[in-house]
Amino acid sequence: MVAAPIFGYLGDRFNRKVILSGGIFFWSIVTLSSSFISKENYWLFVLSRGLVGIGESSYSSISPTIIGDLFTNNSRTTMLSIFYLAIPLGSGLGYILGYTAKKAAGDWHWALRVSPVLGITVGTLILLFVPEPKRGSVDQMGGRIKANTSWLCDMKALAKNRSYVFSSLASAAVSFATGAFGLWIPMYLARAQVVQKTPEACTKASCSNTNSLIFGAITCVTGLLGVVIGAATTRLCRQKTERADPLVCAVSMLGSAIFICLIFVVAKKSIIGAYVCIFIGETLLFLNWAITADILMFVIIPTRRATAVAIQSFTSHLLGDAGSPYLIGLISEALQKNYTMSALWRFLSLGYALMLCPFIIILGGMFFLATALFFLDDREKSCTCCEVGGTSSPVMPTLVPLSQ
Image 1 (cartoon, rainbow, N blue to C red):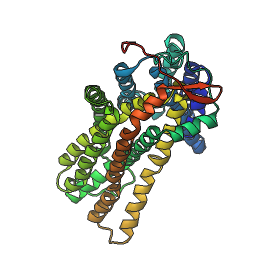
Image 2 (image 1 turned 30 degrees about the vertical axis):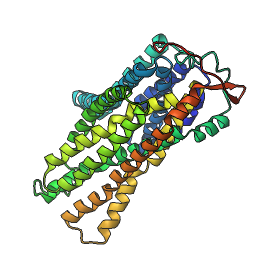
Image 3 (image 1 turned 135 degrees about the vertical axis):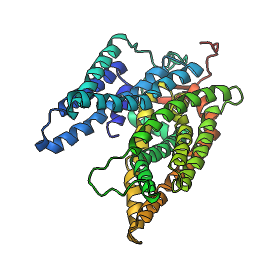
Image 4 (image 1 turned 45 degrees about the horizontal axis):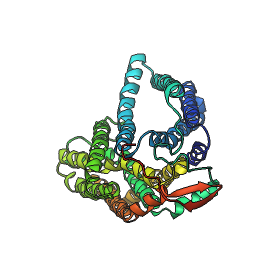
């Protein structure tokens, strides 16, 4: 989160694939090194796991901008969708690969020694084969954008871009919900099973629980489905309205809120019913992953995109998953203190706390509707804005065939 704005600044001014590869190399080396840290140096291990975020911020801030300068229109939507498929697919494969490595070696440290090899390989391939496109070339803006502006000027421009601000707030709403669900939904379902008398209540420090595995598998599948369906739906809706991107996001989030609310209605009686609601709700929630990035590419000029992606990432984490798990836990514990500590109330209190998530998702849907109001205006401004020496002046757009 903290490193993202730094990579955004660098990504708008220097060779992007070198910065991207450097972040991946650093990430891989830190991960490999952490596997050799002894138990006595626990806090060094925690620090090394935190430093992994530097590698993440390098690719998450810069990669979309390279894709944005290689493709345009529907092809860009498709390519961004393929890129964002890596989130659920990589997460799922990470669990599988880590488990397999640990089982084969009989030592969990080997789970941290396999992925660095893949990271270094991919970083090398990026350096050798990924082109460094000229910023704005695919948008026919490369010849008109003369120079980068200062970071302060970039921040002022982003703050005035209403589509960017509202879509970033909506992205934070998605992050808030996914962060809270990832930590608390498996525990919520485990407590529901105790209420249903399916298993005995666990009193040990480490309990066998399949809900985390099932929820993780559902998240992987729904992530894949959401990104694919979102891209296909957006391409179809663009034939009907130019505001398709934010409207698809808004409708999917509002629909997601309904099914997520139903989780807390049916979980007490049926775990299977809760899983069905989770599946539909998460699929709708993940529809907007690639579309949000595409909205940013439409409304932000090429020399400012890496900064925009980075600040959006920073905002999403700061207002979203950096604090939502803690907040949900805080509310649940506050509710538990007021009543007797029965298994039923432990289940209900966590459910009441998690009910905050659908309301945040609805708020995110409203932010996407607000984005739709200003989307065409901001897109037009980004197409007619010529940056020269740190000042902005509107120019007539160059007419080019849509095929280009």
